[in-house]
Image (tube, rainbow, N blue to C red):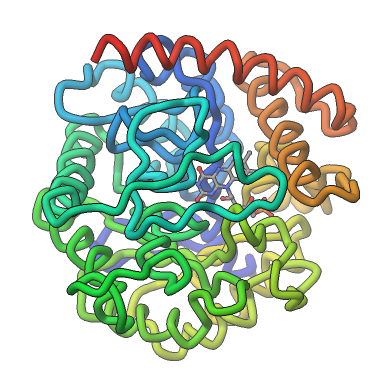
Length: 410
Ligand SMILES: Cc1cc2nc3c(=O)[nH]c(=O)nc-3n(C[C@H](O)[C@H](O)[C@H](O)COP(=O)(O)O)c2cc1C
């Protein structure tokens, strides 16, 4: 008998995932001119689809071209041409699984060099020690801005459905805008959107409802949430449980649990508050606890590289196991596992003293694998982190210039 990992999952919307392995979102930074999906990006998703993951979550797609997590990001908003998005959706479905678009607004986690909007719940800048200046001071959002934000999530979701995606995932984790609202450290508002947890979660709930109302019942609506921020005074595991209870009242098809932010990169296995995470499947303990209260299927992502761990996640009552890095190294890991190969999808760890720089180098090393896969090559996980970081910086500075032209022409 196959392990439950390789059995289908029926979602609340009635659709099925062919198995329980989800390729978690990875910002690819592979947009073509005009911040549109390009040929390399589409080829990358074809490879992942052929690799056997039951669900592909795209890297975060921006709901507003004026606010980017990176200069090579894809933007989907009113007026975007949909042809390339259609090709992207088809590539993602070519292996028989589903593809969902992750929708995001960076809020204060946007590089100063990019320009554009710096919305945030409150005027609290990122604290990254000596790297803090990379990020601009944010502007607190007005009620008018909040209404625009909600409307933008809804219209991007509607466009994703028109382009043929099977669903969207609302990014409310990792310290981006919706996650900034949830955390009392970054949300110091004294109106209806700040203070109590119900108030801090208000914008997320408004976004979920607006998105659900804008799409068909068979279209999946998912949320990515932190199981905690792992920062003193931040969003706690108890807060996460309360948000799950609020989301229980809504119509959600999957809730992915992760953790951390730029200030506390728990999604990479490192925390700012000194809490230790499991060495593999970082958030499994939290997810298994939350599975007791959650009415929707759960997914958890972080640190999974080996088949027994993926099976353990599913055996703990979590519906989908998410993997990012492992699938950047071995896009066909699900197929190989199913065929009985005991492969692991591990990148060498970048263990530098400067934690921020190590995190950036790890991301650069992973993104290099994505570019290789999208160009039809094999991954090269043993590549030098220093060289990968340099190449990434050069590429990002070129893309930043291109993005600034795009921004000026809007
Ligand atoms: C290059 C890279 C880009 C990422 N971009 C995103 C993103 O756009 N959205 C998101 O929710 N998580 C993003 N993540 C985090 C992953 O989804 C995941 O939570 C994290 O890498 C931990 O999983 P892993 O140990 O399987 O890699 C990214 C991770 C990497 C390495």
